[in-house]
Image (cartoon, rainbow, N blue to C red):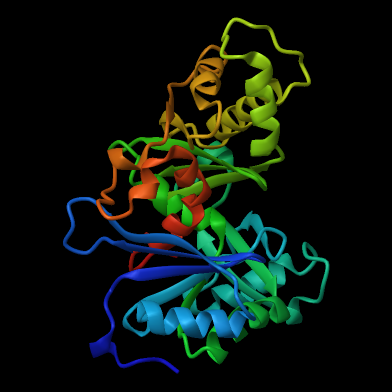
Length: 321
């Protein structure tokens, strides 16, 4: 049940359920010179989803906030398609028809939404494009049910690509774009944004564990020649392909830099990328763009890397897709 608007703030709280923990992130943006992270914590699982969520609802007074959660990778598809030439009120039905042969289940069983890709008209000679996001109805229902049963009103069910877009908005120089690479134990997510909009995204099958092994092998020496199949070299190849593709598809967008979330061995990874990519490379330190005076653990770079998606989801602003 939704609470009355007078009792709720404009802030978003992201609540992510994992097998052994629940991640909660709360970011304040309204009337702030810079976003302020009020909370970014993990709580151990004790009991089922509903019991955990009920306890957190009382403990954190979640009825005061607008709540969101993220679908897990594999629970949805995000597909780039040509934008149908229809009226806005007809767009969802037109997008459903367009992707019906691109998903492996009946489109009648899908929840579908779409987001325009800016600058698509005329870019590389193409018509306007959009991202269609599709998930099985049963997946959406399963994501929402424990929150409903715990009397937590979810306002948004989001996906990591758009959460990362929200964070990249804080890193963009005026009128220039940013490539943001977030690495975690599940792999890498590379997004290209400009003006706070998502232009391109790509999953990279390189995990933190593999990069830790490469960092140990390198032993801090940028000059050491790694084997071609090493994770560092594989990452360079994937990044270069993505950068080249983006430049061809969006020649009017100038990328200012590639930003990489800090990971173990990042001090070695950054110069390795700098020496092989023709773009400035920076490590993401949230303290450069956000404030979190009461969240001491976020000063640890590895903790930042683990919470990029939850922080990005809580950075959601009114009017964003």
